[in-house]
Image (cartoon, rainbow, N blue to C red; front, side, top):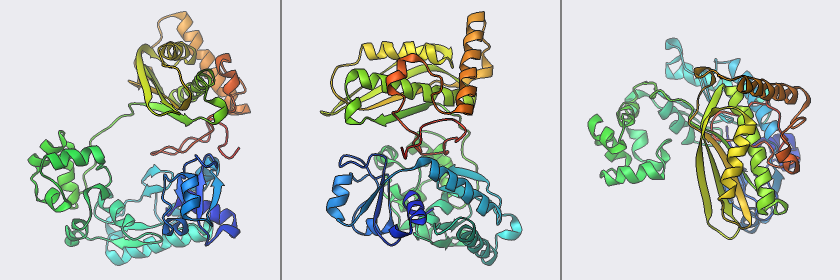
Length: 397
């Protein structure tokens, strides 16, 4: 999707169409634009820009408070529209998905007709939000192709076209090559996509330090290989605090709510955690973080105690951002509770989840987060969209 959050705001509010728009969870000067319309981008306002800077660069910009629940609902409407043309194979994130073409759908003229059908279905069934479509021999190349002609683009790369279209790109234009990976590749003498393409599978494996380098060798040549098998390793949340919650005591209460959200989500996914991590950023700069092992558990109360123990070692100071992360995940059915107290506590936590699902966020909760119930509303993370069935505060509040 093209500038998805901003496009939804322009779709819902016709007076915003054609105008520069910035979307932020916190519409204050210190807030951050998590999405910008193409009109705003033309004025130099990019994703990640502070609201104050956005107003300086683009005096006519309209700053809109983010509405995560609305974006997730539109996401599901989009999937339904796409599914009338092609079945959706994989949902990558709230604004990205994949459709795998059957053999008789792969000739370029047929694939192009299907892509135009998707655009038409979105326009007719959802509204004036647009997408850019990439068609290529595998998912990596299709994603890069889609990004090469935004907004409302349609790009087809045939296997016979390779490697031509990708050679002009920078390494960091390729999804999955972050700053850290780029540094490793440069250390191995790989400074461009042409260098990457010229290496052997063994050389790329050495450069990546894992078998993932071999996969990259095949992906760049158009081979359709599924990636290495992965499993979820963490569940967590972080939140930039409003000024009223930046004292250590208030920040601690917010972290307990973040933990409650993360633990409920972990239970819904069927996992237990064996480590708990806390991270803090301070208003004066700098940060602090620590983690502690825990007996594998999905018990919010037990994890609360571990989190409070981490806070006892945290330095003082005004807190700008707090994050809580559950790590070392394992399937909940891999270890059965041995003691009656554990079984009863697990039943209690699941009962709380059912009540909150039925009646709304934080209808029942642990008392330690009482003063932070209205904080840390739903946000849309990178990766899979959040489950709207899990109760939370709407970020538009």
